[in-house]
Length: 504
Ligand SMILES: Cc1cc2nc3c(=O)[nH]c(=O)nc-3n(C[C@H](O)[C@H](O)[C@H](O)COP(=O)(O)OP(=O)(O)OC[C@H]3O[C@@H](n4cnc5c(N)ncnc54)[C@H](O)[C@@H]3O)c2cc1C
Image (cartoon, rainbow, N blue to C red; front, top):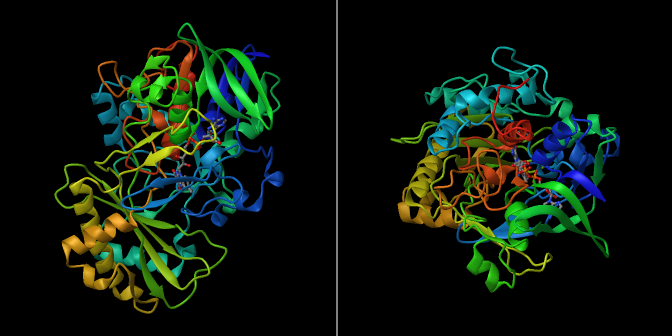
């Protein structure tokens, strides 16, 4: 078998790439995915199809990689989707654009073509916003809506009211550039259906004769000859095979992509040799710079149980921490836990200082990787979280909550005024924001941690690209799905000629 392009990983980025690259009928594309494929809405398992059934934090049954990683002081399960659609098929569907400041920082760091002005039209290309026309896309594959205020759950209404009274701006559209304050989340789940990248992008183009989709196939290694990628080694059940191609693009996500590169001999040479992998090229940044949005859950006793058939997240608060140089570096999620008498607030640092790492523990594809998020290892991240926990506590004491909640269950209220007790709590309860990114960082050749250039091309290996959340230089100040789709669109547009132009 021989293809023009092999895409490894049919997640958020992989589905976009497969769709765009096969628009050229002369290019043959093989899309390989380790998990199963459900080709249409009717064949999708219910918990994948209905967005509210796999809320953030819940591991998707039968469609997860089973990773475990160190978050703060403790380890926790790390959710990652393993099916066509990837994590976009199991995620919580909060659909926020990255903020303008994020991309201007990327461009300042030497990534030409990635400033806000460059990327903004591409966010519009990805979406069809069902609520707002001005400044939004109206013809993209991902449908976006917001819960109407009359449909907000009581605890969401209470949160909104309390935030307004605390002085935060009313924000009807959190995807308006520079928007801040409290308002309904844009969500890619009209009528409760999760519009994953598989549903929005891939399903409508499956019939193209130049596209082959290979599910349930694990790519063990990239084949590299004379510093040129020329195919992949696949394991499918008990069978192993090699498929050749002119170029290979890795879209395995911010955990899977660095692991595949390392197994293929691309990474820090000394570390690779210690695991018995022959280095192909020495790229110390592979698996480093693991970025995320560190969070700490807070719980209150609620007077009622949360409803089974409503989405957890409806309203959110975006704000800047006290004295922060970085605007809108914080976000708070709020949820009435389904079928339990509990209110959750989940303050989250949206521009964390800490970085973690991911790496292989053996050359064996089945070995569990080392994953260390290092959440809250930086004092400024702990300071911002202490402030956020106290803010959420103040918000919860607003009159609007009085008939709905009884008392704070976690953290222990006696820890609230004690910085060191609160720090210990933060490190113990630290949890991933599910936005792992940055582990194959995009950057100029002068950046010692850069793995790919501004077009996603891997340094030191010809015909090999990475295109997914791992290539973000830093995690954007927003849930990252929309940014991953936007980036994949842009990378795809540079396939034939490496230069950026506005979307067609
Ligand atoms: C529980 C959860 C909730 C989330 N909630 C939100 C949210 O509300 N809003 C938001 O914006 N973002 C959210 N995210 C994050 C978002 O979904 C991801 O950041 C995004 O999907 C990343 O896209 P990707 O293409 O980088 O990787 P993925 O979408 O994870 O795709 C990677 C694909 O590669 C496949 N793969 C990996 N290794 C191999 C291999 N060796 N061989 C073959 N295939 C392989 C995987 O199975 C997977 O299908 C959430 C994520 C999770 C897990």
